[in-house]
Image 1 (cartoon, helix red, strand yellow):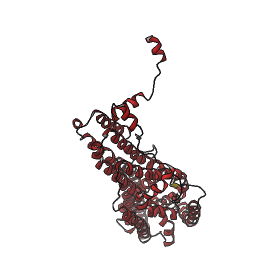
Image 2: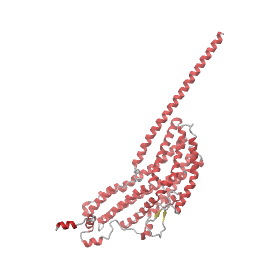
Image 3: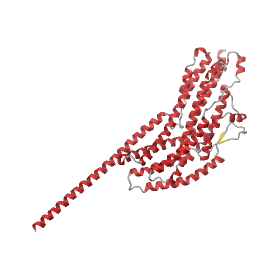
Image 4: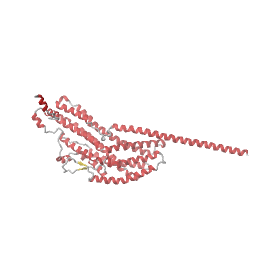
Length: 464
């Protein structure tokens, strides 16, 4: 009889989950049925919630100015659906939308001036074979800054669907956060900060480019028109990263602040489980940010690394040979600008990961487990496991992690390449010094030989 029962018994893969829910909602089967309706993952968002999604999407409202700026510049032509549209996908991307067609037009017009300046720089580079190596480097620096413009369609537009997914994740998260916690996410001063960064991006672009015109002898004024939008684009991406990292920190702080509400609720285990899923969604959003902009920020970091290394080498070699001049000051402006952008990106990613991960984990560890029931204790443990299994890391789609280690690693690599280049330069200086010494010695000996011949001629004349 027992064998027949064992044969007829089938494994239920949801058995452990059902047992955990019974412990969470209580042992009474009637209560279990009543509260089984509650979704463990929080309230579901349907197409009928389109108006609510727009109404409570404070992140989009406060950062709309940067999104519009990116559309005007043709950097990221994503669009917002009409308010009355019955869909949960409030942000979309289409290769033939109005914003994308505008981006094609803007990029094509910019290509005219960029190609013209790039061809002149390339011609100067090819015709500089008779010049010193240090003079050729200046053309390489300003050619490298033009590269992001040509890679924009591949690095940015191609990932438009991923960017739309990231924006929709933010939109859904805020409504879900409101329904679970009962309070909206408030981003203090983010509206004015975003507007300020939009204006500052273009102001800094004009400052950096015009400084090169006045400090570099061969940087003509009309060349600057090929660089304004590129530098502004780099500033805009840095601003985008800064704003999102601050938003992640704000959302995590709000969730941690409301944690006591979950522990004081009628069913704390259920509420804590919903908070856990909210936190996991926040961690996934951080990962999606790196995935959506992986190519753009990857190229961003490489251009910064290359430009900074070459600029530092050019400045140091010029100082060794001729001392400090306006040209070297212009190169130091480029170095300071590039390193500042890289530091902001790495530092903000570090702070966001720390606030979302470590600080939230510490708050959970400070929960008094003796004052809560067993099912809530289990949820606290599962919450800690979820944080360990889903670390909030800013990763560029597997290429590299964005944190302070990346900044120090770049400095280390730059130092290594600078040492190699400076050794090459010192070798050239030693060779030049040897050639100069040989020339001087040859000239001295030639002069002495001429003087001796003249003396011998004078003696011969005297004898005659």
